[in-house]
Length: 56
Image (tube, rainbow, N blue to C red; front, side):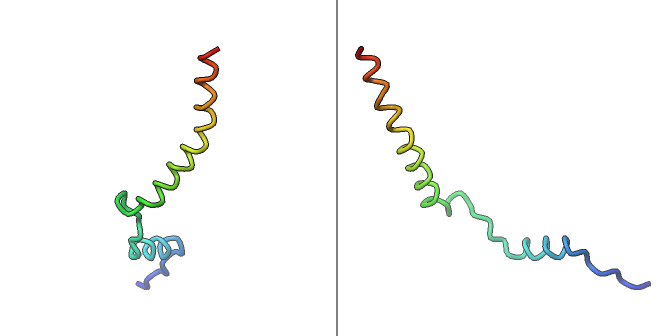
């Protein structure tokens, strides 16, 4: 009996598993902080308008 060649998808999956470059939560601190800062900056103008409406 001869061995069948490994399918291309399986070769890619095995190479990816060998790399094990998954970012753990404690490794993505700077990236996450940047994302949260951008989200807060985008929401800031909306929050600034609300007190002015309440004062009317």
